[in-house]
Image (spheres, rainbow, N blue to C red):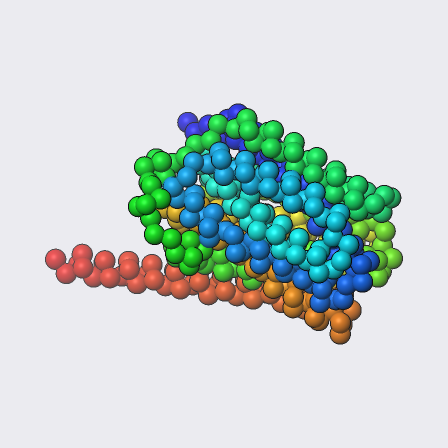
Length: 403
């Protein structure tokens, strides 16, 4: 019989994480146009994403280290509380420089919260259903994509940025209540470890060598996707497409439908074919988006992104986690999230500069080349792995026949 997945703790953790991401995703598409309204340049618009990502990357190794010896509950709740508090500070950022400083601090706290929440989820999911469980847990992020960006854009357009911040903060406080009800499971290896038994190394708490390849592919993928995160609302304004929120709606709907299937595919057949399929769908979605002049093409692009990118990230995360010892999964989880932030952050810088010279549609087409690069790397790695396995089989056969 299958081990039980749908426990009360898993459900409460999943719903609590949903509200964390709803609070965050409400702001994501509205921050670039807001800072543009303050007089920000193309580079400064790119820094909205880049500084946030840098902050998250800086904080995650410290959190990964803490997850090796500290219980989960205090770390999860403190992360959620800090996220709500920093969100409330945004209305005072009427100057571009101050806004960017808040964005950096927000990144520090976001790195904390996402790392501990994801690790807490891994702890309550049975190992035999890890791919499926992380796929369902990822739905908490996906459902937030369905609701939050559309609501955020709507609130931003009909009222003030300050009111948007207040609504976002309320959602954050709801997440705190929900996360308090979770019965966390800390691995025995962590319970039996004292801080004095460990030696902190920033690099050692940033990188888990056993799962470096999925993290590397995550960076490459997000170098492409980051252009969409940064510029899609601005792209809609340039093309006169008012229903840009349809991208997020169809993105999330397709990801919601696809992730359970992708999770079972991962558990039964492994990650390679799944990663190739998802990356291909994302690549096509970027090109459809770049040619969009109507809401129909925005919706089609969003659906392709949901089928591709929406299933790709939990697949890469699960791939990294199954390659990692249980006591190092906090580090591996942080590494994957940092890879996401690093890719998106670098993308914001690269394409923020490029935006001064080319139109936004061309940015999406150029960014899609990173997805092709990711597929090439996966093919090369898979062939090397198959060749190594073949050589190992041949060597064992020679040893057997020599006796």
